[in-house]
Image 1 (cartoon, rainbow, N blue to C red):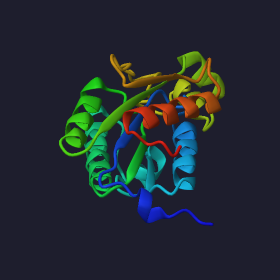
Image 2 (image 1 turned 135 degrees about the vertical axis):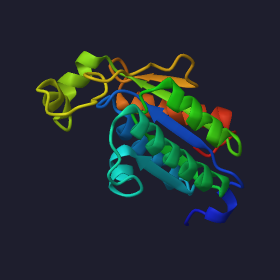
Image 3 (image 1 turned 120 degrees about the vertical axis):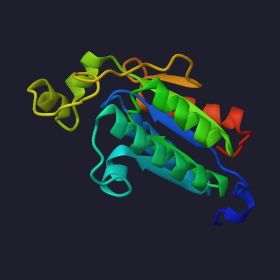
Image 4 (image 1 turned 30 degrees about the vertical axis):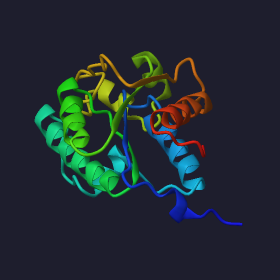
Length: 189
């Protein structure tokens, strides 16, 4: 027996915005949350930095100004999707408080927004270095790299904080699902 998707489509979706240092686990957690939501029949989009820079922000750089423009585009895309009943999971370093404030303001004009801080100490992110970017940044091969030559301004009051240094990926995924269940009154998770 298949899932009756029409019975669980949302009039309005919501946006979960995962922020944290490169290599902290943002996209891994967001991907797993998306899988669970899709398996329950919800319409879900995962937008991450790598995909966005290959599609809607081709050629976008990493200076503060370029990041602000890039993130503003993504915020509008997320808002448009969510207002049409899609649950949107965004996974972006989004290193500046100013940028995250702008993102929240754009999205919350029309749909609910949740900021999720995926915390991991810089030393652990450097150790993990899944794409070899920290190694390159430490050698000076990458400019404007968050955590090395550019700052990461930690969220002061995130809606949810995950600690991938102390919690497993599955524990973090369950925390997000529990948050969704409680905040958005979704019992079918």
